[in-house]
Each structure stands twice: as C-alpha cells, then as structure tokens.
Image (cartoon, rainbow, N blue to C red):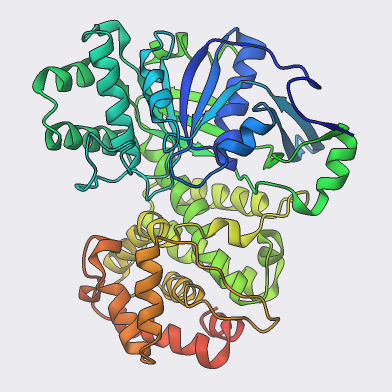
Length: 479
C-alpha cells in the first residue's frame, strides 16, 4: 500500500484563487468537494489555500499528504446505494498563520485570489477588542481577515478590481451581515481609515450563505477497508452523506465567476436565504444539538442508533414535531415533509455519525439553533418546551465531565471559559446554583435567561431528573 502524496498519486496544479479559513471535516467534504467538481466539470481552474484558524489544527498533517485526500460519500440516491471515493486535489497548501504569518499576509498580494471561504463554528465570528492589528496573527477569525484585507488594500493601492468575494459557512443567521459588521468594527477599532472602509464595503462582497451536508468525518470504524480499496494510506479520508445543498444570497452575476450551475451542482444563488436558513438550522441542526448529549448520556454513541432507540427516538420526534416545527412560519405540510427527510438522513444506514462529533461548541450552537425556538414556543403557547429544556440540561450534564454507566468519560470540548464555569457550578453541589449560574451567563447567551418566567425552575427539574433517574427515564417521563 502506497503513501498518499503527490509522488504516488496525480496532483494537478491550479492557480490559487480561494483562501479557506478552516481545515476541518466539513469544509473539506463540502466546499472543497464542490470546487473539485467545478474544476472537473466547469473549467473553474482554481485551487484552495487552507488557513488554520486556531493554533492547534491539521495544517501540518494536510501538508504531509501534499494536500491530497478522499471524500467518501455514502447513502441512497434515487433508491440506489452510493459508496464513492473521490480524490480531492484542489488544495494547494495549508498554512498555519501562527507559525508563518508572513506567508499568510503574502496571500493578500496574489492578484488571482478572488474568494474567501470560512467555517469557524458559531463561536468563530466574534469581535474581540483585545485583538490588535500588530498581533501575528489576531486571535479571532474576523481579526485575521481584516489584517489580510488591509494588507491587500495597501498592496494594490485601493484598486477597485482587487476586492474579494467572501462566503462564510458558519451556521449563524445572516452570517454575511454579521461578518461584514464585525470587520467594520475592527476597521474602526484599529483606526484603519475611511478610505479602507470604503474600499472594503464597495469592492468586497460578504454574502450570507446556508450550508447543508451531514459530515461525520474520519471513518475510524472502516478505514482499513477503505484504504485497502484505495491502495493508498490516506489518513485524511472524510466521510459524508450524499445529500448536499448550498444557498448563497448573492447576485446571479457572481455565478459567472463561481460556475456551480455549469457544473450541475446543488448550489443556488438566491435573493433571500432566510426561509432556507430557518428551516434547516432549526429542524436539522437544532435537533442535532439536543439529540447529541441526550443520546450520549443514554449510552448511545451513533446518531442512527439514537433515532432508532425506542425512547430516544420518541424524544427527538417530540422535539422536532411538537416543539420546533410550531415555531416556524412555513406551511405545516412542507415542514413535516422536511422533518421526515431529516430523520431519514439521520438514519443513514451507511454512516456511523458519532454524537460526540456534534458537541463541539455546543453552547453557542444551542444559542443560535435552539434558544430562538424555545423563546418563540413560549411566546406562542404560554408554556415552556420540555424537550428543548431537557436537551439543555443534558448539555450541562455532559459538560460536568462525569462517567456514564458503561465507564465512558465525557470530554467537554466547548469554550474553556464555559467549561470552567459549568464545572465550577457543579462543584458547589447545588443544582439550583448550576441552573441559575448557567442561565445568567450573558457571555454565553447575550442576556440573562433566568428572566424567562419559569425557565430556571424547569431546568432545575430536568437536571434533578437526570441525576436521580438517569437520562433515559428522564426523557421517558416527558415523552
């Protein structure tokens, strides 16, 4: 079996046209796979430079394979089984700006660069006033991007044709607007001048997008069989479902530069991404966010097994159909149909989607995916949604860091400040303190959630039920 690298496998050379912030599984199996198809079928003729957005990441491992890897698509398409392995060769290099800041800035000097992609999770698009222009690099993603844009502006002396088109893929409503506003905050905070701000707002497009593909990631369970099939030792295989959708709120003219239609891809430039966003983020991502900790605490590690479980399956259906769907403004028949499609995707018999892979930065995910539904449901019905609150209680319990019955240890992977808060509250021995302390943390929620009538008491009851009865019995009571 050969090592996967540019000596042993074909790697074509393309001009570097895309900078991608994020080297994780999702972008590599979604955006990079799409760009591969545009190269193969639509003459896009572009490669991607990956920028590692945090200090610890995969840049070195990606470069060790000469930026080659395979995407393994699994599922059913028109009733037929799909199990494909596509070689991705459109990544030119991966940069760690913490180690190679000069190389990072030099990306801005390349005239062919035209597109910026990002997926830094919901916690990634934030303004941090502690970031400085002189940092190498700024710690936040928008800070890094502002440094890059400012360097480009100065290099090309404000040339109007050197602006960039930016497609953020973070699951934040109107992510383009949020990113644009955050960059403007940095421009003002760093006193970069009105002329640069004018160039940014007039020459660069920052477009809201919605992305949709379930990407479990590295197939640990069957990697040996995959490598045997490939006859390559690929340590970066990414497994994903067949389904994908990319909605980009941008002028149709941009498709001439980003030829997804010509490539026959399920990517659409639309006037308004809001209806697609709310439906998907609420019913797919919102369901995932509460399902994951509930399933893990119930002794279940795979999403499919959770959906098929007698009690956990009832729980997720209750959340989706009784608590999430009523908060959306689309036709009930359409929403029911979409929710059933989501459940079919969760049940994909060919993919082992680990619930722990969903729980990265879960508190920010709950804030953007589930909290709006919790508040809307309460407003519409005058009652609190038991399932969504139980999901929050499960998330808080997961972050306690305890063992479950089979000896598996939870491994909280949220913002360290959040983990310290939650574990410190548990250490008090008071569940009341845990509930009240988490809900009042405005740095998590943007407000004090104890002010929602009845929520504190309901969360306490859910936490007590999990501690005294166990997760399965706790959700059985509300189902």
